[in-house]
Image 1 (cartoon, helix red, strand yellow):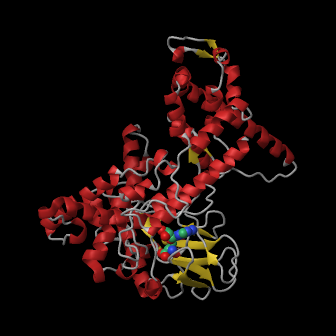
Image 2: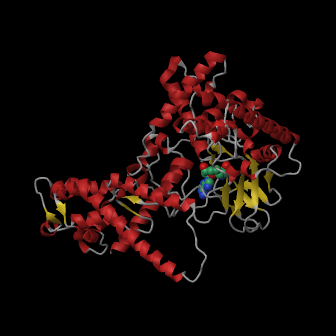
Length: 561
Ligand SMILES: C[S@@+](CC[C@H](N)C(=O)[O-])C[C@H]1O[C@@H](n2cnc3c(N)ncnc32)[C@H](O)[C@@H]1O
């Protein structure tokens, strides 16, 4: 979706060179990629661990680096809204006076025919039909325009006029001036332009650190995505001061420590606290002055030029090779382990055979439940009690299995003394998984899906097993059954493992029928719906996404029969 023109390559390389950045252009070539737009290719063999691009954080474009940084900060605007507004002001108001203009102007938010790049939630009605009934629509509700971005646009329009009235800052008219005479039409046009910028920036942004948040990084944003074998790793120190971006001690941290010490003093008996008493206003002023001197020396050094080429790595972003690449090969980054739904919603493209794709079955189960009154009691129990119980039991059972496997592994490795302490990121991953599970409990419908390999999810098997129980089997599910209020019944916990079965013939039959009845758009033939407002890119991406779902259904049907 967001592509760069060949004509802009020299401009980008010059910008990066002017920033004193290190780009290995003797080893890398920026040229057209078959995937669309530009890509970066290896001119020679390049070895694992080599850094391809090193750029000081002062050269990336973020809201915090931008010409309107203070205004955004004063008005508590951050995140993508801040980046959007900063980009718009830099490219329409500050233009040539902006340090980043020669880079930012290479970022296009129109396609090669001048049409705005819009996410599916803002496609035409005909465009949206291409994705109706897919997981994009039913699981993620991603065809519905997001309130957040519309609110963001309205905040930006109000601020642009406020800043204009208060101190004469020019309003970026092509985005934020709405013509009163044709309000509705002009509002739609300006909103769509704003959304198009947001979509384009979201497809090119990098998460830098707690100060810059998401930012645009020249050249780094020219690497295309590979889902399975990315070659690159993006390195940036995330934990910096969120007020000034300093990686080490800064006056904000000193002030914070000072306030903490003051706070502690309140609760410390008058005789104690000799250390804290030493931190007084004089000291903080001295420390601040020292730091300011250090900072101004540092900027003077920077201005002198970094002749020795040595930069503080904590102040830079780096693109480092994770593996060797061979001559002529396109060098890929990874945008994350993302399904086509996410790739399309955030980056504007899809990849055939994406192994993170799933097919959602929520509406298909709902259809069965709607048609057959006999399922009412079971569904009530499942949605209000059963799904939660099952997920908790299933997670516990999996954990026990994993612990057992780990124990076995540990015993096998017992001879070796080298232990592998868990890293912070591993611990974080685990707690992420736990919170995912908690989220999952909230919505039983979202847990009904088939994964890329064609395997139904545990909840899908469980619900199919449950719905195909005979009345007698269903009654034995409870040690105490309350027919009036099924949710008050007490479950016979020994029965829970039955729900996890994957070889129940009745459940398999039910699932097979459900899959055969599933309605997905048919976009494969030459008569695929086009209609007004459907571009080639919309059709191509929808085809890939829908085909991926068809393939998953086929794989599942094969497993079931
Ligand atoms: C960060 S940019 C990468 C550079 C881009 N090709 C350019 O010309 O500027 C992201 C955009 O590149 C394209 N892209 C990246 N990886 C792709 C892939 N695997 N398949 C198709 N398009 C891809 C999409 O248009 C996406 O919006």
